[in-house]
Length: 124
Image 1 (tube, rainbow, N blue to C red):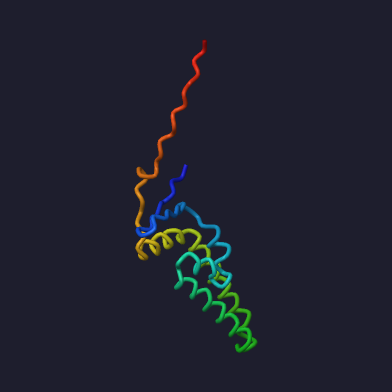
Image 2 (cartoon, rainbow, N blue to C red; image 1 turned 180 degrees about the horizontal axis):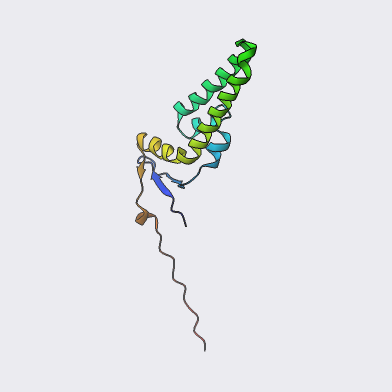
């Protein structure tokens, strides 16, 4: 059973659980103009993906015919490598981004709520 990392906002008391491990959302969808990265508070990584899109479009429209296929292959490999890397290490980056914005790690002991005791029915 995996244990979530709990982050707490000091002003509002909001709690955000982040599950450690591979992040499928970042792996599959960060290539879509970096949108999940911007939403998770990683604007620099999102800007890297936007820059790769701009470079790809510039090569297609402005580059010489002989460069298009090899350059697009290099950009596609870069996209895949970055997406795979973010899949493995993206959640750690997200936790660091939240901590940099003032969130704190919440102690696991404070989240445990005791289960209510049920009165057992005794047989007559």
